[in-house]
Length: 114
Image (cartoon, rainbow, N blue to C red; front, side):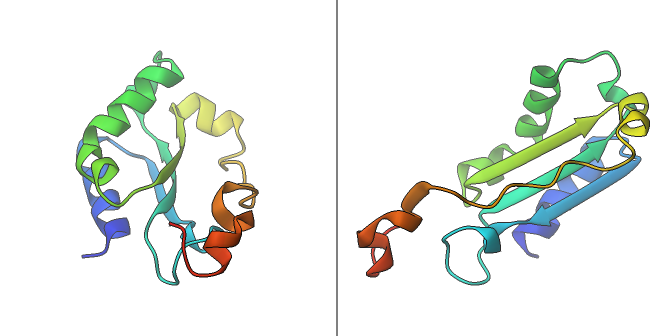
């Protein structure tokens, strides 16, 4: 099972998700091909109603503690209550392109780096 599939399965089991999308965005970063290090999660669940962003993020991090301690380098979270999801137009914002990190580091370009 891929890391992306494991994340999807854990989140689907932990939340009453009415919408769940896990996207591997590693290809937008300076990592080897086929990496699973950078993910975007869009999750809409009724249990987020009345919760602030910090509590929502903490609940996702608890579910994905093993993945966060392992190979996941970055996790963009877009978590919504049903009302917020409807108000958003049922879409999460696009992720920006990688602008920093080691992509401008000469050591990375010459074979070192992450």
